[in-house]
Structure formats: structure tokens, C-alpha cells
View (cartoon, rainbow, N blue to C red):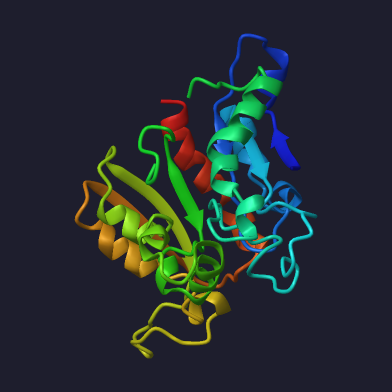
Length: 256
């Protein structure tokens, strides 16, 4: 599978420097090129001396019947899980790929990266942040479609293992410090309600549900910084505008 990687200058001019690694997991329909070309994470990463890895979002070209029928299931929509249902279980093993196979490959191929270095794998990752995440997949139309196809309708326990809101309820790792950016038009004195039909149509459709995650996380030590960004949309323009914040958030832990 293809991936892109950014190496900071510090890792190319100093053989002793080992760059910590930030992994960017893209959303539906994306390839390794989208974030690398439009996310603008390299700016802050170059300042902090952090490498950035851009994996793909699914296997490609497996010729599984139905994998190219819709944008939200199959090609470009692997949901970072290991499928248990046929025929998807033969190749759609993105969880194992992201957490094991890909890091091993990258650390072996790029000695400039520090290979000695949260919700589902406490201690394995140092930090986490997100742009417009599907934060409660079992209650999201996208998540329900994906989990039904990859896990089957009845294996709700497996669904919960890949739902951030369900995971945080049972989280016992280090104190939470999570940054989440979502677009929504806030109330004003003249209109004291949240306005439907905002610039992020996927939020309006009930696909993201970040409030559910933030509410579930209140019982845990630490914090979830859920930021509502006014005047933006569900695009890489938004991500480029706040990419520095997310890299700097990660840097506090990767370089600490």
C-alpha cells in the first residue's frame, strides 16, 4: 500500500537526530496525497522537527465485489478496522496495518525516525487530535453502514471497540488531552440557538457527533478541547488554517 512521509530538515542534516512521528489518518475518499498536499502540516512539523506519515484510507484494487459502489464503504473507506465479514476480511485489515505493519515498515526504511516512541492503545501513542472526526460511529449513519458491512449487523461489541465515544467510557490510560476542531455556527445574542444548515453538512447530517464524545470524556481525568470554528467548512482549507495548532499540540508530548 502507498503512503507519503515528510522528514523534517533536522533529520536530514544531522545523522544523530531521530524525528518523532506524527501519523495523519485521513477521512473518507482520501488517498495518501490529500493530507500531504493540502493539509499543510509540514509547516509546523518543520519548525518542531517532527516527521509526518500519511497512510492510505483503505486497500486498493483488491477487486472485491462492491468495493467501488459508494464513497463511504470499501475503497477509500476502510475505517481503520480489521473486517471480520467475508469478503472484506481477506484484505480490509486497516487496524493491523496502521498499528503494526506500517510502523514496522516505516521505522525499518527510515532510520531518521524515532522508532522507540491513545484510546485503544494506551501508552503506544503520545497524543491525539482530530478535525471533524466521526466521534460516535455506532450512532452515525456512516459508522452504522461500515460496521454492518465489515463486522455484521449483530456484533455490536465489535462495533463498540471502534467507536471513540464508547472507548473513552472505559479508558484507563494517561490523562486525556485531546484537541478537536469542528465547524458549527455558534449562537448570537440575536439568534440564541445553534443554526442548522451550517458550512459542515456532515455535522448537520449527524455523522460526526463530537458532543457525545466530549460528554463521555467528562468522567475521565484530563480534558477534551472541543473547538467550534466559525466561518469554515468541511475541507482542507479548514485543516490548513489550524494545522499548526494540531502539530504544536502533538509536539508538547512528542518532544517532551
